[in-house]
Amino acid sequence: MHVLLMFPNIFTPLSFSPAVQILSAVLKGAGHSVSLLHIHKNLIPNDEETIIKEIKKIKPDIIGFTSTSFEYERVEELAGAIKKEVKTPVILGGIHATISPEDFKGSNFDCWVVGEGEKAMVSIANGEIKPKGIIHGEMEEDLDVLPFNDWDIMDSARIIKSKGNWLDIAFSRGCPFDCAFCANALLKKIKGEPYVRKRNVDKCIEELKYIISKFDVKVVNFADDEFTLNHKWVSEFLKKYKAEILDKHDIHFVIEARVDTINDKTAKLLKECGCLEIQFGVETCSPRLLKFLNKGITNEKIKKAFDICKKYDINTYVYMMIGIPTETEKDIMETMKFLAIIRPRIIRPTFLCPVKGTQIYDYCVEHKLLSKNVTVWNFESPLKLKSIDSTTLFRYWFLYPWVINSCMGYEEYTKKVEEYFKKDTTDSATFDTLLTDDEKLSKEMRKKKLEHYVYKAERKKGDRKFRFNRFEMVKP
Ligand code: B12
Image 1: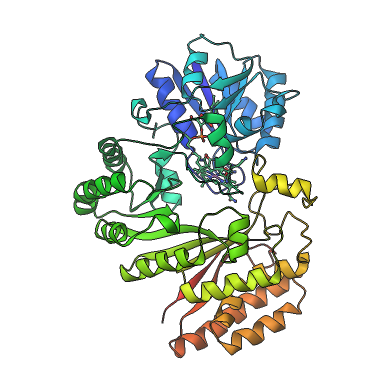
Image 2: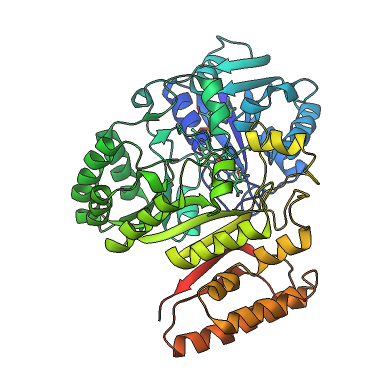
C-alpha cells in the first residue's frame, strides 16, 4: 500500500516529527511505500487547495495525520476538506487522539489510533485491520525491535540546518513522574507497563553514527523526557558516546533532566563526555507551587543541582512557568529571588497552558479559570486567575529578567521595573523602548563587570509579541 503521512508543523518552528519518522520506518520495513506532506510555511503551505492537489498527485491508499491538541482544530478542518475530494480513508494518531478519544465521534476522520501506533499502522496497511472507528494501538514493549527512524522521509538536512546544526533525537519513551501539568501521568495509565523504555546503547550509538555520516550535525540535543533517569544506562552510553562521537567527530551534546537526577558522579561524567548544557524543568521556585504542581523537587534540590553544574562548568538552562493557578505576587517574587541566587545561564519563562487530561486542566475547569482557547506559544496567560490580576501577571512576565536583576541588588533595574510597571504594556512602543533600555543598562553593567540578565527576543519592530523569548546571563 501507499501511505501518505501528514505532519501539521503549523504553530512551531520547522521540526522533526519522531512519530512520522518511526511510522515511516516500520511501514517501509513491512514492504509499503510512504510519502509525507510536511505542512509548514516554508514547505507545504497550510492551505486546502495545495494540500488536496498534492494528495491527488500522490494518490495514496491511506492518509494518516499526526496531531497534538494544538493543531487538532485545523487538522479536523483539513480532514473534512480531503474527505470531500477523495475516497481515501483518513486516520488520525498522536497525542490528541490518545488523550481525547471522546472527540472522535462527529469528527471527519474514518479512524483514530489511540496510543502507540507502529503495530496498528502496519496492520492497517497490511489490510489486517479496517481503518474504522477507534483502534487501540498496542505498545511496543521492547524499543530495540523497532528499526532506526526514517531520516529520509523528512527534509532532515534542512531541519537540522534551520536549528543551527542541532540534531534533536530521543532514545527513550515515557517518564515515571506525575507532574500535574504534563500528559505523562495520563499516558502512563493509558499505555500501561512498561511505560518507561530505553533503547540499547549500541543501537543508539549506531543510529547516531549513521545520522552524522549523512548530515551536518554540530550539537546533539537529547530530547528524552528524562535523560539521566537510569544512571547505569547513562554511564554506559556516555562512555561509548565519548569514544565514538566526541573523540572522533568533536560533536558535543545537550540534555534535559530533572534536578534530582543529577549527582556529582553523573555530572562529572557528562562533562567529560561532551555535555555542554543541561536543560532543567524547574517551573517555579515557590515551595508551595512546587508541591501544587506535584514536581517532587524542592529548592534545596534545585540549588544542589546548580552547584554541581557550576563545579563541572556545565551550562544551565531553565524552563519556568508563570501564571500557575493560585500563584500570587509573593510566589513570583520568591521565584525571582531564588533565580537570582542560582543564576541559570538561560531562563525561559512561559505562561502555564493547561493540557487536557492533566490534573492542572481539571483544576482549571473546576475553578472556572480557563478564559480563552488554549493556543501554542502563548504570549499571555490563557487563564483568568483569582490570585493575581492579569495585567500584573503580564508585567512580571514582561519584566522577568529585570526583576531578577533587581533581586540581585542592582538599583538601576529596581528603578526601571518601577517605571515600566506604570507603562501601558498593550502599546507596542513599550516593547521597543524596553529593548533599547535593556541595551543601555547592560552596557553600564558590562562596564562595571557585573553579572546580569538581558533579553534575547526575536522581534520585528512594532510587533507586540516576543518570539521564543528567553533571557540570558551576561558574565562580563
Ligand atoms: C518531541 C516533542 C515535541 C517536539 C516535536 C513535536 C511534534 N509535533 O512531534 C517539539 C519540540 C516541536 C514539541 C513542541 C511542543 N510540544 Co511537545 N512533546 C514532545 C514529546 C516530549 C515527545 C513526543 C514524541 O516525539 N514521542 C515519540 C513518538 C514516537 O511518539 P508519539 O509522538 O506519541 O507518536 C506515537 C503515537 O502517538 C502514534 N502516532 C502519532 N502520530 C500518529 C499518526 C498516525 C497516522 C498513527 C496511526 C499513529 C500515530 O504512533 C507513534 C509511535 O508509537 C511529548 C511528550 C511525550 N512523552 O509524548 C511532548 C508533547 C507532545 N508536547 C506537548 C506540548 C504541550 C508541546 C508544545 C505546545 C510546548 C510549548 N508550550 O511550546 C509545543 C508545540 C507542539 C506542536 N504544535 O507540535 C504536549 C502535548 C499535549 C497535547 N495534548 O497536545 C506533550 C504530550 C507533553 C506534555 N506537556 O504533556 N514537542
